Length: 132
Image (cartoon, rainbow, N blue to C red; front, side):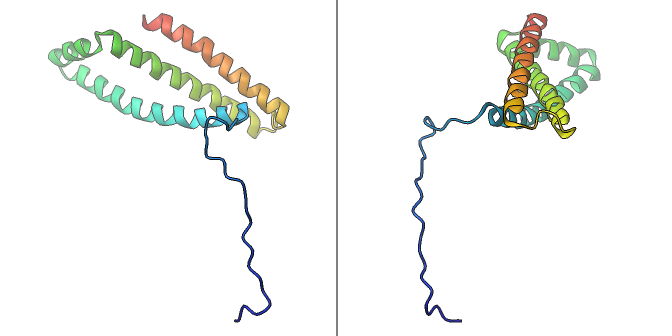
């Protein structure tokens, strides 16, 4: 095949690589956070299952886990894990509602994303009260 008579034009598109100027809609941010919270929950679950297994192995194992969990930094991480789990559950319920055909429009999707973030904020505060 020959290229006779065909002109190849390259479209000149503006490229914005400055991430500080890109504004995502709240529904997109909510979706991205749902994925991130899922990854955090996956890795946290592995660590928490290891701690549970170690604590149930013997009395010394239990005391070692108590020593590991005794500290502000670890409790802060536990609060973060609970917050990620809460957001993943709330975001998952939001996605299930959307799968049923509700809140699929632009305005209602943005509102449901804001509601999910608000509910997660309340659950995060409750988790913080429980942890400390």
